[in-house]
Amino acid sequence: MNQLLTHFAPAERLGPYEIKEQSRMFGSFEMHELSASLPVVFLILNRCRQIVCANKRFAELVGVMDAEAVFGRRPGEALGCINAMSAPFGCGTHEFCSTCGAVKSILESQEGHAAVKECVISCEGGKVLELRVWSTPIRRGNELFTIFSAVDISDESRRKILERTFFHDISNTAAGIYGTAELLAECLHDVDCDREVKTILYASEWLVDEIRSHKKLMEAESGELSPQKIPTSTLETLNQCIRLYTQNKSTHSRVLLVGPEARDAEVVTDPVLLRRILINMIKNALEATPEGGRVLATCFSRDGAVHFSISNPGFMNREIQMGLFKRTFSTKGTGRGVGTYSMKLFAERYLGGSVHFTTSPEEGTTFTLSLPYPGHFMRKQ
Image (tube, rainbow, N blue to C red; front, side, top):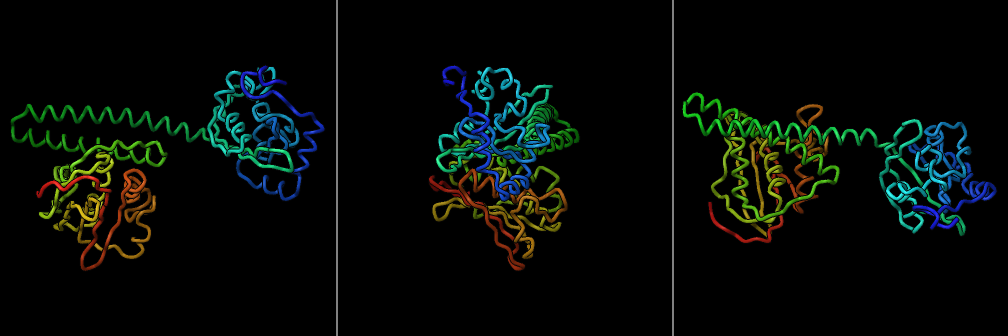
């Protein structure tokens, strides 16, 4: 068949005899055992996108006892895709196939490139499959084939939708509370009422900041975060983070202050991510400081970089040091452990900087964030 007769991919197919001969190329015991052991769908497709090898996972997915029952079909046909079943030339040839990640990944592999894409397949009977697919070219003799594998991402997709909805709704609610508290703080003059309103104001500001923090972390982990870098004052940013804590009860009886040696500079960075890192550094320092203890924050320029340091009197033993930046590591119990992890993730992957620490029984612990510094020295605090 000529490709011009279809809406997207070529319509050509090989006959039963050729399919059988090709399947024998992959019929070794080792190949059978390997494909059977994989926890994902595994297929080998010929140049016409027809299945010549399939593992047990795929046979279970399409509801056949023997994987050979799908040989000669294309993936969408075996899965019962409604577009594949309604197109005269089958899977890949319907108008809607031009938007299918599975077909597009297979075609890219036939050009010699490995490809990873996502697709949503509506099947007969109302079933919907959400898949992430991998297509990799492989040669056997003079023949080009595609190794095709797929995993179900329906749970992941639903979770992302729920998370976006949750963050959108709760962010709006928290911002509304904060805005109302801000107006009340401006209007009330009674000392006692003013104190209570300010407590609400600071608590709502904290809530908004925590929501933003978790949203940014999830975007960063999924690769969806896009830093917005602008000229940013280092000392002003540090003072903003300090204020968020000193106005909140989270400091308890601990002292949090900016060191007298702090210097201001202008650095081009994402101020939101910068604040997230500094807030986590301050939070960890406060939690490691006994009541009555002091946490010291500072910023300065040196060796072509700007540095933010947060120091506390606590000491971390070797076991804590070794697990510090791991995602689920925490000294505060199960379900915690993203603070130091997010600091390093934001700094190194998105801001081009680094986070490191020093700790000793004599000097306590100091976390330092270092960022590239193309700017200029400004002034003394």
